[in-house]
Amino acid sequence: MLEGKNILLGVSGGIAAYKIASLASALTKRGCAVQVVMTKAAEQFVAPVTFEALTHRRVFDDVFDRADPSVVRHIALAAEADALVIAPATADVIAKIAHGIADDMLTSTVLPFTGCRIVVPAMNTHMLDNAATQENLATLRRRGWHVMEPAEGRLACGDTGRGKMPEPEDILDFIEHFAACEKDLTGERVLVTAGPTREALDPVRFLTNHSTGRMGYAVARAAAMRGAQVTLISGPVALKKPPFVDLVSVVSAQDMFDAVVSRFDRSTIVVKAAAVADYRPAAVSENKIKKQDADMSLPLERTADILKYLGERRAGQFICGFSMETENLLENSRAKLAKKRVQMIAANSLKVAGAGFGGDTNVLTLITADAETELPLMSKDEAAHRLLDEILRRRGR
Image (cartoon, rainbow, N blue to C red; front, side):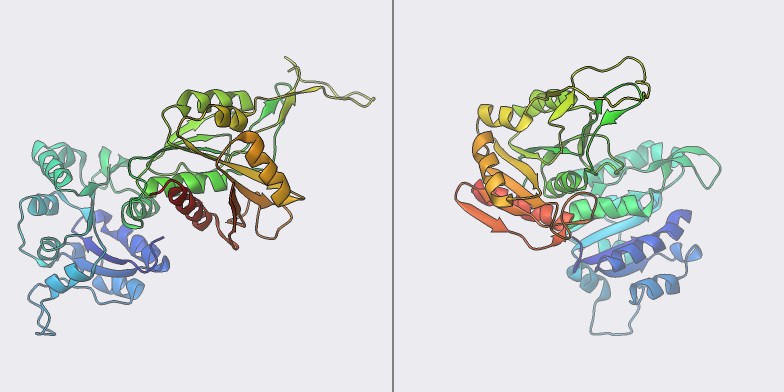
């Protein structure tokens, strides 16, 4: 999602500067053009050549550098960038940018920049909690800066508390959330379901399926990146919570039904990507069922049909269900569209290479009452955005 973006990465003089080399590398691998600007203090912790090797670009640290007199460098850098990220942001740099001080290359580049602005504070807990620092951060927020909350843990000074630099992968998620996409879903309240359910047989065993939740998590993440208020109702999965998403964890089909129904009226878009069990054991044993010599049969009963329930009660919401098939993909999915009374079915076949459970890719066909849109093989993140594009188009946005 960040491919082709120009990221201006400001590095100030905190010990956490060493972590930003990993961030610069990760951004570059995502296809970003990363331009690093350092303070002189930052160079006491990390040499400029480190960032130059990782980004393949010269590091700038001196506003009076006249290597090319035809270019006012700090103005040019500000004009070229799509997003400005200051990490680590020391108390000193935060104070300067909050008060419009431009006395070095970094702060001089900050002042003319008008795009997406992100600051990642990292400092001692008492410095962070100082009233002056908190007022400066509040000033930045009022002016449209996105302030990433520091982590908690053991600090370089030996103290333990808030102020620790977040891990580079978390900073990358934060940058992607604010800098990657147009916020065309602002104002929407998106409800997404994901993952499998588990239907208990006894205290040891349960019935489930192969869903990993990746498609639903991709939809939730994409919707949040595009400005929506997102609630993700997830069965048991081994996935990291998407940033800026309200996660509700459930286990059984009935748990998911209750969680979805209680939030349905407050939603404007629903994407039902979860693989919910159609049946559950008719009775759950209080104790482990012991193995016997004879065969055993398990009486099953139907679970609540969540998608059908929502389709029969929708009042302006756009509902998209998912259909995983092994045969007659279009016929079965179109029948599901009509039976469930929803506006869209995202269909995929377990027998198509690159589609289905567990992988990073999918092959979706978006089915509506009047059209079938076949998407090529793509990552689940890309498929999520294409799905949301179609929903927006259908909603006239």
